[in-house]
Length: 314
Length: 232
Image (cartoon, rainbow over all chains, first blue to last red; front, top):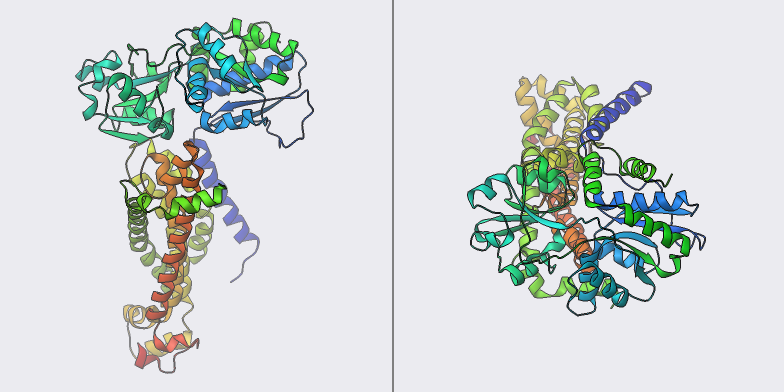
């Protein structure tokens, strides 16, 4: 069978057409643009900025990175690492030096690792507790007024059917509802299956492991799940008419955005710059940026650059 | 404890096998997805392969498009279709069927077309119609190669069915994804080992079936059975 240039063209054309088809439709999650192998290759001055695997956190990481770069600090990015269980090991082990965290979530995480319980009830107490509980090589800088917390949302039809406004409204009906959340939700306290059971006495009919973002949003919209775990700054909540249930028993107190940083990297310049960023970030600004990221599909790096320019960093 | 010994530990703990959503449950789900996919793929691919091989028409376009079709990222297909009906099984099945069809078509077509022309000629000379030639001569002679295609498809499907876990379904992929999310790597590695072992076992079983289903005259490796009519 004669094979030659015709064969190659047919194969190449078909492969390209199919790749193009797949690429056009798939959701473009901003993957790290600047990853470099980390093993001992960076100078001691370089700050490697990491992030969790969701756009809200990638956005904050880009803001931190851009702010530091504008002050002449050498920066590398390692974005979309994974969930906290995964990336905390990286920053603790020194592979990355900085990432954006949320005061209650990170405090619960380190406290649970140490086998204790969280007693902090406001942001000041959370920051103080963190500085005490974190390993010696890590610390947190000033917390921002901006918050982005885990929320339990239910889709419109479910919220209307059962008149849901706060999480405790779920206590009688949860047994008939399916909840979607990332796999780690199965083991998390306060915001997870064991935590919601302990604080609200909730037991859901079924738990479906799904990624936060479009997978959960699509499942909620089609009513394949009735309730799901999203983040408060996400625009898909209001866009789809989901109802974010009020955390009336305060399972999750303040979730202030706060930089988690390697103590050695917290030089005067770096600290001052990041504290400046924290003082200028606020929840409304964050939500507005998330609309651009989620609805307009603007890459996080671009949205961050816009914010930095508007706030006097570049 | 090293991660490897933790994994061995996880695999050898009986409760991990028998508990709800344990290894046995996930294995059954995984086998179910794979079997359903292969069943559908065979129904689609075999007739197409036979038609191409028997008539000799369309082989250029079909076979070269199939090579390109193997480049389709199954994961992307599943994620796109998920949006149409979240949590349904069919997006996963469609993605896996797209993966399974090309090797079966390609092998079936090549197998039919490769039947020695002398054998085909002899059959026609005996007065067999086109259909009879296909069913009584070409197919039996092509069985080994067709089954090779099925084996290839089966292995790929079993290995790839792990993506069902990404869209919240079951199967052995659940151990990989949940193990990673919970930083319980023994689960993730264990899941991967199970998928590989399952694929190898199925491949081995199909190899035995292939041997058993190959007409005796072909097993010795001769291209032309001593007597085409006696075997047909």
